[in-house]
Structures are given as C-alpha cells and as structure tokens.
Image (cartoon, rainbow, N blue to C red):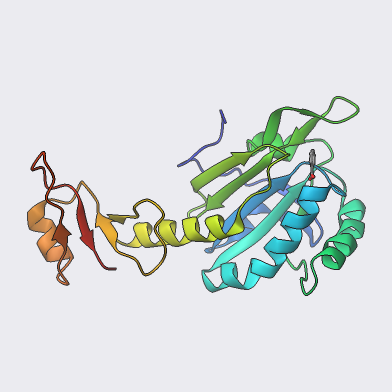
Length: 219
Ligand code: BEZ
C-alpha cells in the first residue's frame, strides 16, 4: 500500500456524499473516524459489508468514531443501492455518509485504489481499504483487503479499542487481545517509570533470556 500510511495526515478533500458536499476534516472534527472503501455499488460483498457496518454504527458511536464509506459510483447510484443494503440486512439503517468518486481522484489520494482491479472501461476500482483516523486527522491503522474478501468488523472494533487504549496509556495489546484483558507495558517504559505509571502493579514474565520486557498489567 504505497502512499498514504500510518502517521500521515489525511488530505482535507472536498467530497460529494449521500449527505451532501463536505470536507473530510470538517466531517471528522475532533472525533475518530473509520474510512472504508468498496469496489462498486450493487456488488454482493459490499452490500453485506455496508449493512453490517450500519448495524455496528452504535458501537462505533460509543467509542466516538464516525463512519464514512467510499464507493466510486455517483450519489444517485449510492442512494438507490442503500435500498438494497437495508433490505438485505434487516434492522439496519445506513445513516453514515457514502462518498461518491466517479473520477477515482478521492480513492487515489486516500491510497484506497486496488492496484490490480479495473472496471469494464479499464478505470481503477477501490480495494477494501480501511483507515482508522484519530481527531488529529492522522492515520492510526490501515488495512487493505482485495474485493473478494469481506472484512471482519469485530476485528475493526477490537483494533479501535486497542488504538484508543494505547493512545491514552503507555501500553500495547498482545495477540488476540480483547477489551478487559491484560495489556503489556510498552518496552520504552523503564522499570522505575513502570512502578510510578502503573501503581496497580504489574507482572513480569520470567523468560529464559532473563530480560524483563514482557510485563502485563490491567488498564
Ligand atoms: C463484491 O462486492 O462482491 C465484489 C466486488 C468486486 C469484485 C468482486 C466482488
């Protein structure tokens, strides 16, 4: 995924969406945001993803995360497609905006274009790219899936929980971490500082190397 990546500020593009014209930074404001792209309207995997994202919207909202979808068709197409999405996923309401990008300029600038996929006219298509952006408008995490593999939204929520926890405290989350489970103290924190920073205590794992780098604590 060359181009825009973790740590970069997303460009403040002015875009057409199902909620009208907006600038990306204005939409995000001081919230976090999940920007997620889709190859095209009226395609099967995308239809399942957008519906599930609508069902998960309250969970993202609880975490202060705004949602913004991208598909390269035009707004009238998106509006008609939403009828299919809401019909396929009962109980869902697509209340987040979907960006239109007929010229592919937006997906190019956001590094969401699939290097291999082209439409019937040879135009670029978006991949299933997803950027998690914080209130500072910088990318904290990016994933890139091909059109044929739908994303796991539980994993996106889990990753947001990790990103928000690790933005607040000098910790990292270990393999398969779930909220509520122990976290590890960042390697950059010295033993002296760890004792001050984590007064609730922490447990250092005794390893053959005798290096004291695997330190578990509770948030
Ligand atoms: C889909 O959303 O199902 C899809 C879109 C483009 C290529 C393959 C699958």
